[in-house]
Length: 202
Image (cartoon, rainbow, N blue to C red; front, side, top):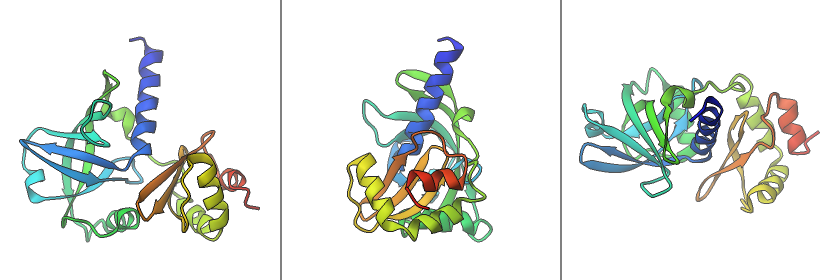
């Protein structure tokens, strides 16, 4: 695989990871469904059972274990929810009340995607819009009709009461009653103005 192919596969894998929000976590001989978010520094955040934190071979299958899934070999690092309350709050905004009371940051060690292996570091990227993300979300949530219209146009999903929970250069995350709907950016967003233009908000 030449460098161009490797770079393209990494980009495709990152887009796939951003387009999903659920996974099946295999730890030892056990498995558990989890929902994840991205921390501002690019790592994943998940609620975990104590058993998941024990030293063992840990694999995340995104969005679940299937023939076309992404297979990520990962390391879990427990964190204190009181010391990192913003991460917990962010997860709850996306997914609601957590099923478990422990929390972990996820480091991706290596990934298999479309039968190709990728260095996990290429999938950990800081959100370039993190400093203005909250403001963008607030403005979009004040213009729900525009968000609903664009969501239906781009995804075919009609979310009656859309609530924007995340923004990054590659797209917009919208919370719906049935889960997270992702709108892919036609070109990477570089500014708040670009996002508003996309939603025809003046």
